[in-house]
Length: 443
Image (tube, rainbow, N blue to C red; front, top):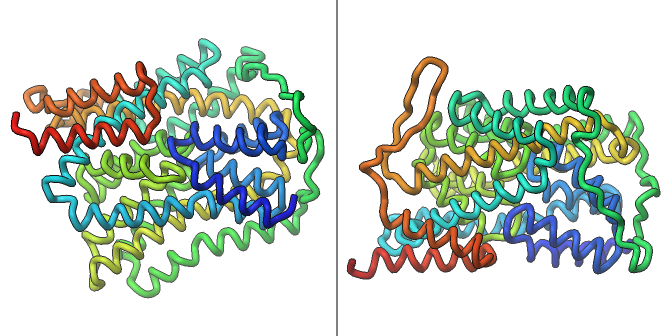
């Protein structure tokens, strides 16, 4: 595949990556598999399954994998970079606008309308992922167990994911075929794909290649953190952010929706970087921009550094924090794909990987449901508290603090999402207008 033509196509794809991972994967499916016939359907599905097994945003990792299939290492780097670049630029600008004008009545009202829209979108994500992933009764049990573990017993997110993978492996040995995805035949009505389903990639796995990519990848991943430690010290906001988001980069199984509850808990309760409602606002901004939804971490990094600038100008600190967080979040994606893809190409029918994937994706349904609960509590109520009883540790709302405007907009957002099936951007626009009207019009 001519590299220049591939880069142009990846640029066009990057401008259409709205609507979360489902929409982003659908765009790549349409452009690369159906329209241009560059990738075979089974090859596309195999790449997607591997990316879902990895930590990090699966849609962006899929772009790296497919770019690597088409043009080798440089193709993977170009595809993955272009996939996130428009979102980095756009969300950086929106974060600055939020910091500069977020306390005004107009901007606050807009965000008050966006938060209920996000709640409806996350609820839709729960049902979509459940419909695609929970194809067996045991997987439903895993999903419910993950939700209860997180929402009722406050089990750490990485522990839930690890136990789900192990449970999937155990189930594969006791319930043969439980993890098999629904059968879908290749579309053979068009010309043969450029990358056929059976051909092996020329980039073969070797020890030298493994060591080279691992060394370069780890160096690029850690170099900015070491530089900030050298300049600002080990206790600076930049060091804390670099280490924290490097950790999240290796535990973000299931994409942005699955890990946001973990990030929100740490950013709000542990570090105090944001108020609870601001995580919802950040996700609303990420929903309106192209690229992976995990880009919301850029918003978190921007606000955290702006509010804790040390000796720097707050705006300079904010830009540095946002860029650092973005770097340590996405560089590992390139490392995981470029390191593992040649091996995965030769393990397409490995049952252990399929079983672990099935366990993780089932748990992700429970994780996203927990995220929906977190957003609902912080959107529909102004006050919440943690209720503890033995091993139980739940966040419960103060019923007297219910926000009737938020409840009304949420009901409208649910109607637009599930009954009228509006696209994401139209739902966000309508709810933002309702939030603005609720603040400016007399009641």
